[in-house]
Length: 147
Image (cartoon, rainbow, N blue to C red):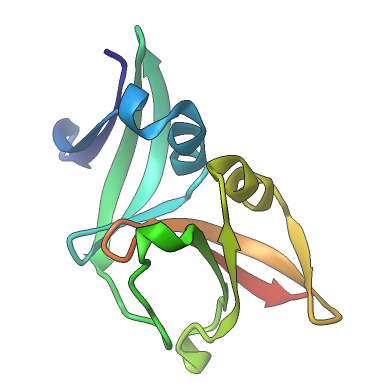
């Protein structure tokens, strides 16, 4: 069975951090996760440094950054209510203010947002600075700044 495996890079060594069976999560979720530049797992923030294909397995090599800082209005996703995407201001001074919350029905819809460089929200165009999958809350997040 093909797997999506997160590996943490530590001192030029790789330690398995999290594993998914791709047939269980679906190829669309697998691809969406690979497009995220940051991952939150068990209260810790990781940055994606490499994305590798090894036989049938997808490897995401991540580097530990720091404990995760909670932004304003963070909610845990109720999985029976769709896949959540938050769009947040990429400014620590605003505590990463929530600009918009979108509910998607598939990961292909999430991928559509993750592939964008710019988004128009409430008559303002924003540049996407980074993307994140927050495992702890079960949501995707785009961090944006006004153009």
